[in-house]
Image (cartoon, rainbow over the protein chains, first blue to last red):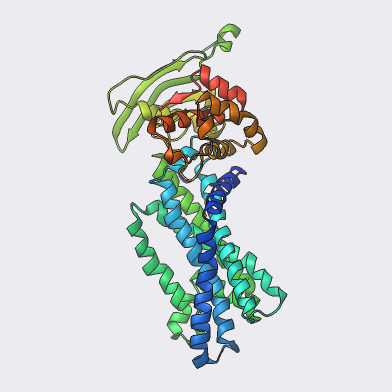
Length: 259
Length: 179
């Protein structure tokens, strides 16, 4: 009952994850359309459209550059949407968590299940982009499949902060702050559309603290064959964001639901 | 306190001593003592804001005590909330059925939170649906049910818990607490 007690994750978390995947299955058509439609539009529209003027970027075709960045940013936005709008809906208006808390499950399990589910949705989106990019011929070899576990990790990394926002929010409009002040700047600055070494020097330092920078470095190296300088560091940053944000989210949701 | 064997066997299912709850200085539950024994119907009666719901939420480990002691099945709620909830059916004040699922899916998903597998639930589903007269609506989405019918289903969801014994137990004893 202590607010700050370290969370314990039990198998029950999978029941929460399963609940969400069963709901997702009922709405599979719009979900699949979203997963494939978005990257196709981005890659064809920007990749070919802008790519004609840009030619190569960082030693690869612009389409390859963009595809290997979009797969990371899409994992970010997918997990963020799920961790905010959907988690908030289940937590507040729909009272799904109240029902779950009348069972042996605890807030720790619910949050872990939700986080796994957010990352699973990121994985679906990443898999769709990988398929589209392969069809467009911009994927370099089988090692690109390693992008899938990385995309899952990116999902975990961004699910936690989004769930923190859900715990702090009193309505849906609150999420605009996070999107405009956090998600969109990362989308623009972290190397999705152009290499970060073209940023002013100060900004290059700043973006090193943003998880999407590390996410993009990893997916770009796996999909387009670029060499990451410190892949271990990139992975550790993503894991650290996931773990710390999970803990904070658990504490805040305990506070929100229990007192 | 010393209890003979006979008294031990009829130990209260729920025992509260000097139970207290404060919300930022405002007293919601003020040093209450009560015992609830197995096989009895027990109700809290009081005006709005008397602390009835808060007391039940404390008994299920859903909100921390501000003082005193509270045990269920002899287990302290502060440390064993999850174990207690695995043996108790709780009917909440407001219906919180899952609107995304049908009647039978609701029962099945809810049972999965108790660690019950598909097979175990299937074998019990017909009986439960029959009990609440919802056999013909088993494939219906819950938000298409009438208010009273939703209430019956919420009531029954709480009986899909941990084991059949627990479900029966909760029909007969204070295991089933209506908050």
